[in-house]
Image (cartoon, rainbow, N blue to C red):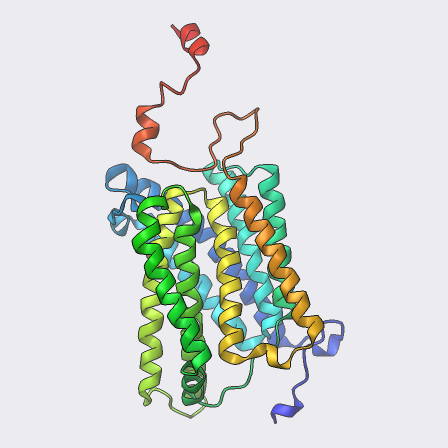
Length: 346
């Protein structure tokens, strides 16, 4: 039965089934929800920071802000739609559409938050999208899993255990050593934690998705303890991601957080999937080289975005690409006015 399924061919109209259309619609709606959630959460964080301790300073007053919860619900709806899209359409169709959330987030940040991207930042964003899309388009098809036990065997192989160990060590080092010193000035610190933890979380999400799919088909996977271990890992990863993503959104420009988070999260997730599912073992040298070139493109775009985050247009001196602490902004507001202009105001 599995051999009768042929790879999807987008040039053959017979292959575009109703399920593919459903998956396409779900993937696009997922990008809309996720891209919008960054803006809604940022507005909620700003409101919470105005009346309490900011998330970037270690506060959790945003938990009492309804607007932040609206953003969280929007993101959850988007993630559910993205999860459901994989049940209808192949990954080669669904995954690249996640890049749409970057464009949506940047457009809404421009219109609602007044955040601007320098022209080189825009080029970096394009490079990130091109590189990520290339990797997704050349990624191999997912292997068929018949049981959660089979997934557990893959997750406990030495290669993936080594990757998981390195991720845990790296996350602990970043949280303990680098975030206290560089968290307010280097976006990679917060986003690095989110992306590293997220790559492990996605493996758990896929395991739970397979468990639910098999359960609904008549093979109950809820009886196995491995299913609940995956659930605990997923919950831990999600809470960690949300905590440090909130810190990143509250400290840096949304138009920077969204693409860098997408690029790092997608790249590390693909790496984790390659290690756990051994995807590259069935690929040709040309496919692997293409994916490596796409990684270089992603790194170039990320570097360009990071290095131009503080550049502003001369005609818009009030535009700031990064949000420093609000207290410093308010206390220095008068001092930031040029001397000649202040004298003319008197």
